[in-house]
Image (cartoon, rainbow over all chains, first blue to last red; front, side):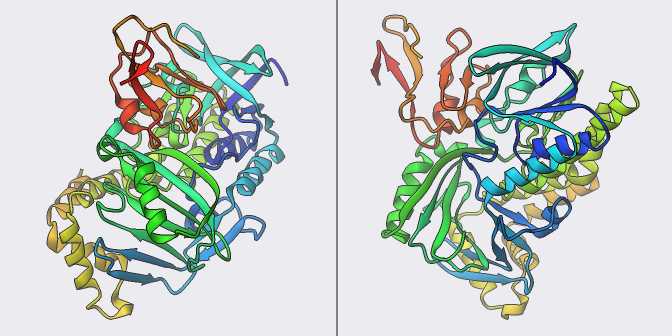
Length: 389
Length: 72
């Protein structure tokens, strides 16, 4: 480890590793720091990703793909089931403790140095400009200088705050989640299952995602507003008892998913934010692997270029690039989310009853949206507003 | 890990033995008053305003108010 790098990345999740990889590929000297002892562990994630997002960065590998997804099965509050069969593989279930390793490996192959068990406790600031990080590593305090710090430090993201960026998230936008990886759970291997309704998970959903024969990620997210009254763990205990009383729990994790639009400011003097830290999660689904990788890769490219051209002001192009690729879409998804969760259980039931009257081949997600529109025309108004801005 | 609570004052406490160190509370804290390491968490006393947002966002109910060291 050197005393100075061009770029320091804080956090070695998918966003951090992609930032590290794309910046290193342009020749920047780079150090990526991870506070936990392992890259990729503990896994606080449902582990589903769309094929489209994944293959931009890495080819699917049986080492870490545990299931290929070609269907969504969605349940209304009264149990009405609607199957969306895409007829081809549209997504994957990952084994993230292996997947994250592979991503970090691509960063190190590109030239990045990686250090785990390295907790960043402060920034080095000079005249308000970020010039490096202060790290606690095996009981020692070390200062490492850099021209740019990329904070990919996850949902808790404190690094951005120390640089003066407003990163804290409204508690109503924080999905409070609990998930178990359980065996003795018989779930279809080609489908993601979602349960909607206030009984399951108000302001969120209950999910069953396959992780191989007889094993699945079972979890739920409750929006902050509802979690205030009752914790996601208590909802989860109830669902497990109801659906999978014979399950054995192999892993259990709590987690917060920031389901909001991207932060207004994702760059500052010498600092960039990526992934959950920048609030780059898909606000409707809560999926953050793909969008985090996209955010991280853009941050890495932009930072690498700024170093190459020796012009640090170029890092501010990041927001524009992000907006072009995802930011604008997230605005729309956030509006849809807000309207979606105003739909009552009874209205969801009606929408699903209408859906099952369509022929199976006509049951598409677009159709669901159109059917929901009939119930909630305000959905369209909100979406139109974003598109027309 | 322990904060010196003023007598009779309500204070937010995180029960470290039950915590999963997920960081949801840190993300919603408006004051940057929670420090989270790999498996350590603590409230930074002078910064905490006892606003309760961390309590509301905790998935597993491990953040509580206490008075004179007793959960309320």
